[in-house]
Length: 88
Length: 364
Image (cartoon, rainbow over all chains, first blue to last red; front, side, top):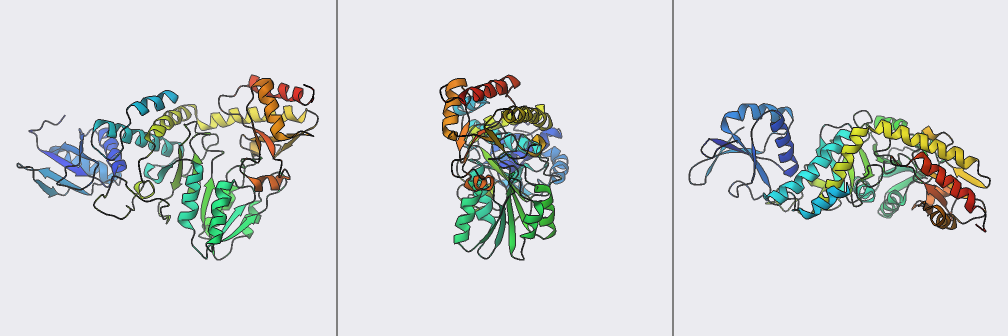
C-alpha cells in the first residue's frame, strides 16, 4: 500500500456511487488504492476520494476511461497542505 | 438476510456523508446491493438502479417524474393502486389516461394497448403480472411497439422481479419498478426503480445527497439525482444477501420451481368442488399469484379458517387492486390469494389443499 512518503494522486468523483465503482474497477485492474475523506480544500463535498500511487496514473486512466468513470478532478498534494490540480 | 440486516443496524453510518469507517461500510452495503441488482437484470451500469422504499414509491417517482399536463398515458385495467392512484392524481393535473380493459382471464391484449396509442401518448404503464390473477401481460410486444412510436414504457415488476427472468439488456423498457421484499427476498422497506440512460425524469424528492454540496440544486447524475436523504443502507445490506442467493440459484431455476408448484396448486384447486380459480389455466402464462374463491364463503372467512386450521397465511380481499378485481368480476368481495415462493414445498401445497377441502364444510 502507498506510504505517505510516496508521491500520490487524489481522485475526486461526482458521488459516492462513482467512488465505489471506481474503487471496484481499479482494484480489479491491480491498482493499489485507499479511500480517504475528500480533503476540504478540494471540494465542499462530505464524501470520499480515492488515493493512488502517482506511478499508477496511466493504468488508472486506462481503467477508468474504459468504464466511463473518469474523475471530475485529480490532484497531487504539495507540502503545506496545498494541492496541484492535474489531469488524470 | 435477517442476520445481515441485524449486523448492519449495529454498524450503520450515514453513507456518503463522511469518510469514517461506518459511513464507508454503509455506502458499500448500498453499492453491493446495487451492483447485484444490475447483474440480476443484465445491466453493466448499476447507477441507473435507484433505491426506493418499495415499488409504490418507485412507481410514483416514474409516473410523476415523467408525465406533464397535456400528456396521454395508456395503462391496463389490472393495475395495482400504486399505479392507478398516481395516474388519477396526474389526471387532475391535466394528464389524459386511457385504461385498456383486460379479458376475463386477466390478460390485456397487446393489440388493444397498441390501438390506444395517440399522438400525445407519452407513457405506457403496465404490470408484468397481475397481483390479483397472476396473469402475465404482453410486455414484450407493447414495449417494442411503444419504442417504435417514441413512447416511454414503465413496467411494474413487483410480482415478477426475482421470480421470472427479466433481462434489461434485451428488453428495451425505459423504466422498471419493483419491491425488494417479494421475489427479491429482501427486507421490507426496500425497492428500486431502473431508469434507462437518456430517459428524462424529474425527481419526486430532492435534498441532501452527500454530493455537490456546494450547490443548492439537485445533482443530475445517477443515482444521486433520484436518491435524497439518508438511505436505507440497513435494508440494502439484507437485500444484497438475498440477491446473492438468487444469483447463485438462478432466476430460471426459481421460475421452474414456482411454475411446478403453481401447476400443482391449479390442478389441486380444480378438483375441489365449489372452488373457482381466476387467471390463465396455463402456469406458464402466470406469475406465482393464484386467486380463488370458495362458493358461498366470504374470502376473508376463508382466510381466517385456513390460518386457524392449517397455519396457512393467505391474503384475502381486493389486494389493493379494485380494477384488477373488476376485470375478473370479483369486485367488491375480492378473492383469496396464495403465492408459492422459492422456499415453498410440495408438502406445504398439499397441506393447503387438504385444509381448503376441510374448511368448505361450515361445521368444520
